[in-house]
Image (tube, rainbow, N blue to C red; front, side):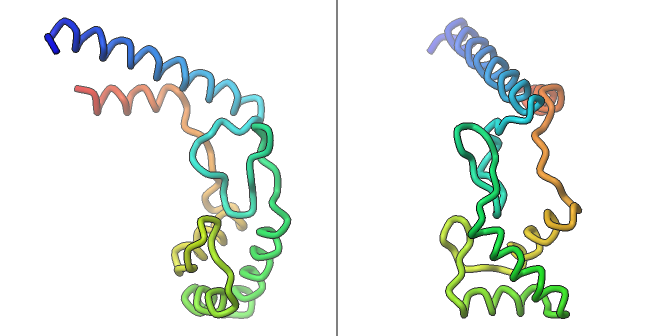
Length: 128
């Protein structure tokens, strides 16, 4: 590819990325699910909207109860695995997975889509 073609390709790719990102941000600002990775444990996407997954919500409640009873994150993960529970992707529970569920439950790390502005600055830093 010549330098001229490479520049044109990079420019077109950048334009497409910016249009897609602007669409995601607009959808998220209206409360829609904009496709920023998989929905969190306890949620699922239905027709472009995030809804609660009742089965996973029951598992979250089990995790919460075990945590409130004083069990460590590892003890909770071990119990979940012994009972046959798996993560959203079918893997065994790890203590970090339990921590993330609890953090979202208690509002310590809400899932928020990044703004287009921060994404553009990040893209600019990596595309040089």
